[in-house]
Image (cartoon, rainbow, N blue to C red; front, top):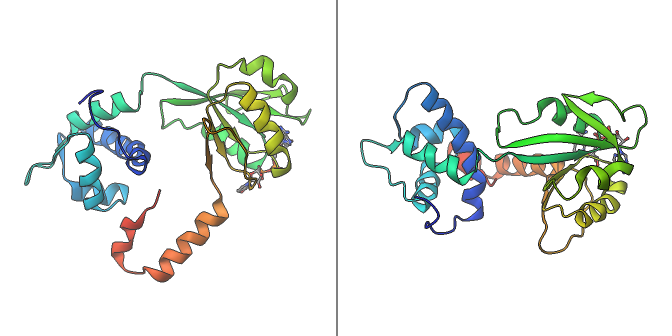
Amino acid sequence: MSNEQPKIPQATAKRLPLYYRFLKNLHASGKQRVSSAELSEAVKVDPATIRRDFSYFGALGKKGYGYNVHYLLSFFRQTLEEDEVTEVALFGVGNLGTAFLNYNFSKNNNTKIVMAFDVDEQKVGTTVGGVPVYHLDELEERLRGDIPVAILTVPASAAQALTDRLVAQGIKGILNFTPARLNVPDHIRVHHIDLAIELQSLVYFLKNYPSPSAKGENHS
Ligand SMILES: NC(=O)c1ccc[n+]([C@@H]2O[C@H](COP(=O)([O-])OP(=O)(O)OC[C@H]3O[C@@H](n4cnc5c(N)ncnc54)[C@H](O)[C@@H]3O)[C@@H](O)[C@H]2O)c1
């Protein structure tokens, strides 16, 4: 179950942290096996999708037994590289940025916001959620090519110029909460999160797929 497994599809890979979090809780409560129906109920992904996802990494549930929690956990730990903490920098300590810093993804042990940047002198030099806030002018000096991921919670008008500086610093991935569409070289991954579109899409699904089975239509 190590590096020889086939490449996992992106949609499956995105669901792994969800499965992982739930399985950790199960394991902590002493449970040794879990059925796809139980998992489905907990993570709101339909059982057929779960079975297909799990089959990619060789976890074949047995009828009447389900999945071995320990096996799944060790797979997820390996795949998600839980031991290796990925450092993240956040840009824009406003409403949204402050909320993220206070949350700091504490349930996800493998990612950590280690520094934040703003242009507002009132915010520079403070600490929010235990994370130091630096002036944007210090971006190059502080990142020094060491931080692979950035979260953008700046005004849309500031997003592209900031992105260009991040790209020059060797950033690998950007989680973009601004409405701006970012231009980046092909090797850089941008995940764009537009809450208005997510909300519209939810309402669309509620209107067009109102049956209870629609809960499996989780497209994330
Ligand atoms: N607040 C929300 O619920 C929400 C929801 C979805 C998307 N967004 C988007 O997220 C972004 C942030 O929203 P917000 O409500 O937190 O805004 P905000 O005005 O409260 O915060 C923006 C922060 O960015 C700082 N800033 C400005 N230019 C900067 C730069 N070049 N580098 C670093 N920091 C800079 C400002 O000083 C401020 O602290 C916006 O693009 C907004 O459209 C916000």
